[in-house]
Image (cartoon, rainbow over all chains, first blue to last red; front, side):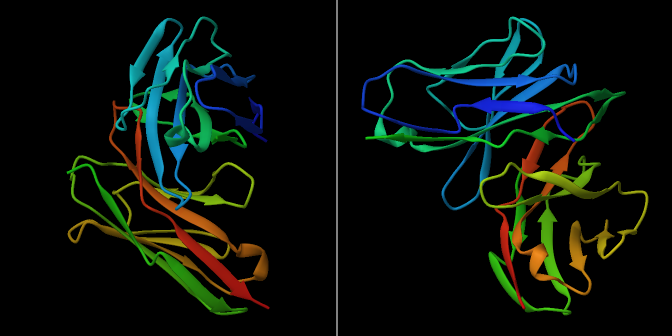
Length: 115
Length: 112
């Protein structure tokens, strides 16, 4: 059973608002990720972290920012939300297994709608 | 070079039938190929995975077939059940990168 939690599950906000999507995991995993999932299902990596104070941008450009001050916490922030940010955001974590990528454990997602 | 191409986009199968989803990749450096299953309102969860040193892996009704020379791998669901109705994603990863490249997903519906 994966122990990775995202809040809020659903959020509807107006244009220009600042939002933070929370993600926490209790598995002690070093690696954490944020994926953006289009309505058409595709998953795009927007941010990842290899550990505390380590963050990198993913393959899909995003106006969001992330921080990793604690191992278990990887919040995502949008300073000024726009309708184009409407999407589902999935947080995931994995553990290191040598040089091999470990299993990704996903949260249940945060569905953001910007009006 | 980084893409993983998945087909079909959607699939309807009768209960008891075989569901087959295919993926193809270009980057020969990929060395880990998992399949994820996602139910509505949930995050994806690992279903089964394979490394290129074997051509097939079976777990219960789920089998991955891997063709290294063709750079293709596929998921077979035997005796498909309505409870298998979900979205399935293939993915690929390269050692040392700690990142996955996902396919575009396949919506599977199994009719009762």
